[in-house]
Image 1 (spheres, rainbow, N blue to C red):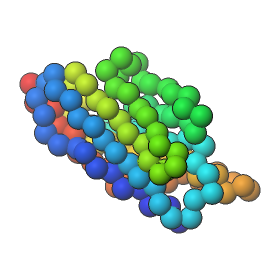
Image 2 (image 1 turned 30 degrees about the horizontal axis):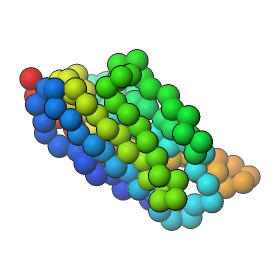
Image 3 (image 1 turned 90 degrees about the vertical axis):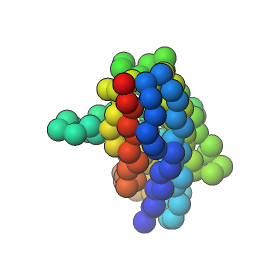
Image 4 (image 1 turned 60 degrees about the horizontal axis):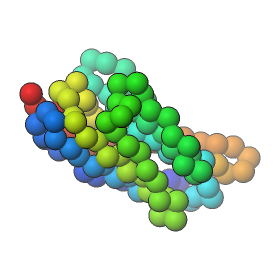
Length: 119
C-alpha cells in the first residue's frame, strides 16, 4: 500500500499565495507520475497539474502561469506553489500518485486539503 499525506491548505485572500505538499510513503518501487487534482462543491474532480519523474509537467489552462508543480524524487514528494489565487480556486485539493509495480500501475489518492480563497 501507498500513503499520501498532503499539507499546506488554508484560507487566504484573493491575490495571495499558498504552497501545498504531498509526501508518498509505503510500498513504492517507482512513481512515474504524481499530480494535483481539485474538487469544488457541486463540481467534478478536475486536473490541476501533473509531473513525471523526469519533471515533465502538464497544467490545466485555468492555472497555467499562476501555479507551479515541482517534485523531489528522492523524497517521493511533490509541491504545488499557487500564486495570484482567485476565489474560483477554492476547492479540496487532492494529491495523486501512479505507482509502478512492474506488472501494473496503480493509482492512489490523498485525503485532500482544503484551499479557500476569499474575495
